[in-house]
Amino acid sequence: MSSRGRTAGSGVGSLRPEPREHSVLPLIEAAAWASGLPGASQLAVEAEARGYFRSTLLKQWELVHALLAEHLRETAEPDAAARELFSAGGTRVRFFLPGAWTQCALGSAPAEALDLLRVWSREGDELVAESLPAFGLRPWATHLGPEVLALLLPWAADPDPEVRRAVVVALRP
Image 1 (cartoon, rainbow, N blue to C red):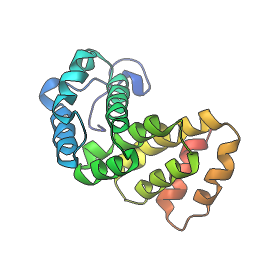
Image 2 (image 1 turned 180 degrees about the vertical axis):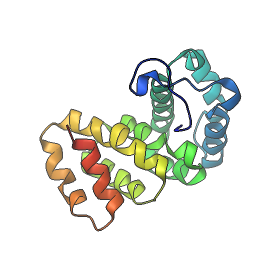
Image 3 (image 1 turned 90 degrees about the vertical axis):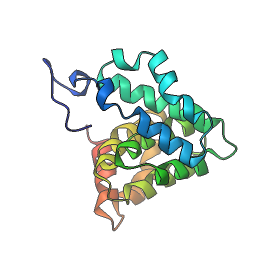
């Protein structure tokens, strides 16, 4: 993810899209299959049908979040399925889990959904540390408004610096 060069313009949306020959989609499919996620073998086909390779890098990430969230919702226990997928995937796959989990859980009890993100923030994975504030926590802040502060206040006092970093980055202006 971070090794991609920039095109003209600025911001994440201007990062060059992932080309076919370097696609993360086969890795996501393999991890999804290993974790038992429904529809795992069709994730790349679904992504391509939705315009994955014609999209900006940010749109590609958002598309993967949406696809994984849809398939997580197909399981009896989406949180357990998300944990399994996180365990089965390498860092390039884990990058997508905070956004996918948040999209999946956004309508559920926020405290329980945020607990899983907090666990992942402690993993020490650099790509998760980059994606979790923007795609995992910020959507909750937008959805809940000021109510999110009470839920995230314990994060700010957590002994793990990665947990504290995640909340600070997510809520900074």
